[in-house]
Structure formats: structure tokens, C-alpha cells
Image (cartoon, rainbow, N blue to C red):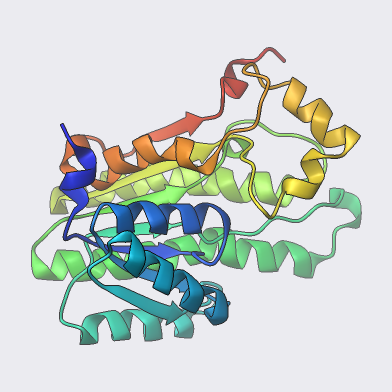
Length: 256
């Protein structure tokens, strides 16, 4: 079964596509000959990525300046998608942020801004897509990017862990509610992945100590999420919904 070929011609929206895992998923979709819609706040980064996606084989690339913390921005983005007359097939809720700080000293504004992106933004994008699919009498696939932090916790990142636990539970709840419409909702739970946003940390003593706690003794690569992504995005996973699957080098299996 060629899952990549099964994605060809599908229209795939990736939020938070201007860096990291979002860029990786957009490139994967392009290589699979999907029509790629990339959204993020940094339009200059998206414009550069769009050119690359066309070169990789995407038959169509749409750039959306999109802030998932803003309901108005999300609605404007979906209005632009609607105007094209070509419905989405796959929605990847990848946009997310993190912050550090002990709970006793964390400003409430920092908590609120993180939740606005990591939880409310995921909810809004998922609902907007599902409303359209249900109205059209057709299904679709939503892939939420959660984290192993949604299953276990560590010191100093309580808001982030809380937000990813919310995404895990949201994934399961929406999967149950929307299964009757043929809308599948699943989540990828990455472990520690090397990206440009975290590269500096992994060179510190703290980062090196964290890597030693991973059973496979190394960081993951963004492309090591691709197999699960394709399973969720295509008919290869047509009977999968509500699944939240870790890809973490065995980290969740490690002893406490």
C-alpha cells in the first residue's frame, strides 16, 4: 500500500507551517502531490516555503496569513479557502507555542496566550473544518499535533503540559461526536524532536541529560513522524479515529 500516492490530489491545510514540524508536514504533502494550504503568522517564511513546495511537486500551494489565536483570522482564512471552491480533505492542527516558568511565578497573561493558541486555536480550526464537511455531507481527516507531555508531566512547563492534555482529550471527544459524519480526528504525540526552535537547548547540559532519558538515546527527526501522519491522513487509516499515538523513541515506556 502506497500511502503517499493515496494523498495525491487531496487538499491539506497545515497550520503553524512556517517552521519545525509544520514545514516538515507541508513538504511531505507536497512530495505526495497534494494541494497544500499553509498557514502561519510569518507570511515571509510561508512565501519562501511555497516556492519550495511547488518545486517538490505540489500541484497547488495556497499561502494564508493566519493567527490561530484570533477567531477573526481563522474565519478570514477559511473564507479564502471557501472562495477557491475546492474543499479541504485534511486539516493539520500543528500551530503551537511553549513557555517556561514555575507556576507560582508565571504571569496569568502567559498562561492565557499559550492556551489561546494551543487549545482554543485547535478547537476553532477543527470546528470550522468539521462544520463545512458536515454541511457538505462528506468526511475529512483532522490531525492534531499533541505531545507526550499530554500524557506525562515535568517541572516548569505546567501550562504547556496542560494544553497538550487538553488536545488529547479534545481529540477523543471530537472523534466520538463526529464519527457519524465520517470525520476522523486523531492525534500525533511527538516526543523530543530536533527542530530549529529547540536545537540550542539540546546542546546544554540539561538538554543532553534529557536525551539520555530517552530509551533510544537520541532525539527524533521530524520525518520520523511521517509514517503515522500518512496513516491518519489517508484511507490507509480509514477505521482509525480518536487515536492518540506517541512517537517518542520509547520515552513514555521509560520507568518513573
